[in-house]
Length: 103
Length: 152
Length: 270
Image (cartoon, rainbow over all chains, first blue to last red; front, side, top):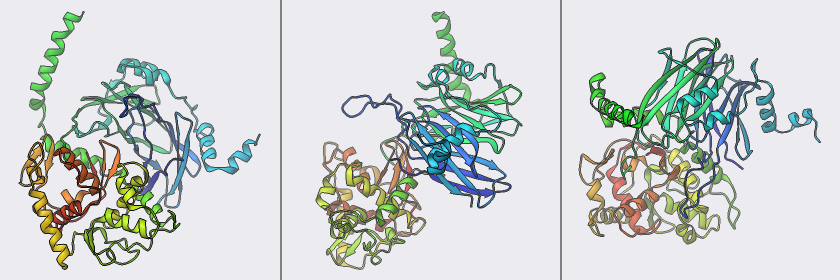
């Protein structure tokens, strides 16, 4: 069970700046642990963001995205009270969705 | 076997995943591009992404630090005000996996995104944008990577 | 093909090294690092620990199935805001000067029934040490921006300061290092890390005022205890022990020296 994302959506001008902090190991599959065994790749492969239920952004990620990834983007036409939903899927098939309200 | 309506009604997670797969504006959802993520050179990645022969352009801004104190987390961002920029990809030349990520913008978002990447060593970072008319633009910057000292 | 390319590569590297300063005003390394840190200031992964810490503070846990909401961190039971910048301090119920980790151990034992000694013996990043990481992030975040004001009213607190000072300057181990070897003077540096002078107030959000912190290099949140543990490792000293009187005394010395400095914890570190 993954930890919740931190999503902050701040109205600015006619849109909203959305900042998302995700909790994920983002293992490259190239690292060796203390015993010398390769730690298997484990990383978010798909991300999507929606405004009031309609997808506005999608992303495909590889192993080069940093651990505990931070992403920032700007949604046009979003106003205070609108709902921002962010979802991710990783290469294990684990999923997570969290939401926030535009402040 | 639960019906699609039942699944949508149940969990937000599944609903959002289905929404991500089915309600994309206008364009078809692209699958995770294995060829692009496996490619080892800038040219091969661009070919796999269908962004061959990009032109360097000041209309695409790439923000990245001159020095990354720790290559494990390097903040980079790209933005363009040109209309119809549907996709921005980030490439790190000297990484074992050159392609870091691809962002696809719907009509309701600005064509700008900030993210954080891992860099194995000092390298050029590329942002490549695909415009609606099929043109590809790029911007690049060298980011020096150092491990830093024992303190802090 | 190979022979033709190598001189080209050498020439290119040479011109990169020689030509770059001529092309633009090359920022100093310190400025470059400052720019890097500024770009990371938003969205500190420590926030993930803060959120978890808040949940763990309120969640009934342990053999006694109780939350930590009655825990006294120095400003009264359950008062979290402002507590961090007054630690370490003396506590009547234990009769000891305690830092944040030590006080959390006390509360986890008395309120929740955990075995404090066992948690202290658990390696960093495992088991209940992960709980400690989250709790220190939560508690320190509640004092973000406030200024350090460690009490020195009690003789035990003043004694801890003096002991901390002795320990700070105590040279031993195979390299004859003390804390002061790195942190005893202005202007010291290891590679690209500026080493703050901890014998005085090094400024807002620096040194003592910068921990706990998310350590990018390990992708984990480090409390002061873990930071001290790593200092001792770097000096090739045996570690005095998690939440031991010695480590608490060091924190009293550094914390009192930082009087008036604003805390930025939990911050972001290399």
